[in-house]
Amino acid sequence: MNKGGVGGVGLGSGGGGGPTAAAAAAAAQKQKTLLQRVDADIGNIVDNFSFLVNVARVNDPPVRNSQEAFMMEMRAARMVQAADSLLKLVSELKQTAIFSGFASLNDHVEQRTEEFTQQAEKTDVMLARIGEEAAASLKDLESHYYSSSQRTNMPFPADN
Image 1 (cartoon, rainbow, N blue to C red):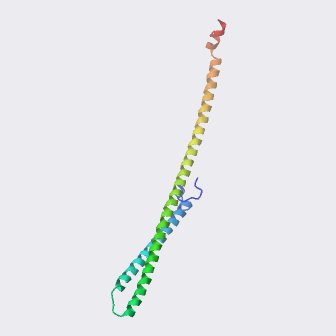
Image 2 (image 1 turned 90 degrees about the vertical axis):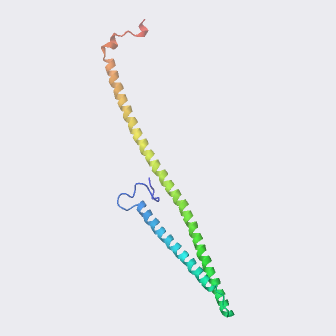
Image 3 (image 1 turned 135 degrees about the vertical axis):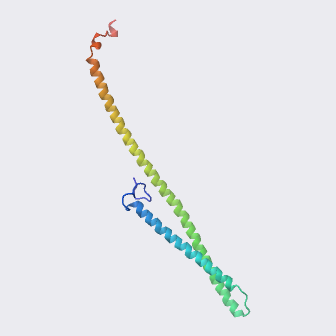
């Protein structure tokens, strides 16, 4: 009973369509986007850090030192922005892991519910068949008993 949820069991085997294929494509796209963000943020941090290390050399002209100090502050701010972006990415990944865990748990519960419903239907059919067979057997036994010569020759317990 998958109602369009992510990762429904048994729905994607037919031909690449449906909720499972769409969810897989969306997950692959999201993973690609997240990896690109990670690469960009880490590249930013590395570039800015290497620039900070290169500029950190002590020079004699005071004007140049103030320019370099401004550049260092700017690069440090960019590093902080990239680190903040990475922290937001980690938070987003945690939320995704939590919510996808709930979605897969819900899908698993729905699958198990469907399996138990099918099992209950099979059991009901089997019990109905057994009841019909028992009724038919009882009818045959009753007709055999009532048509038997032994029944008419047996004394009743109330006759004594």
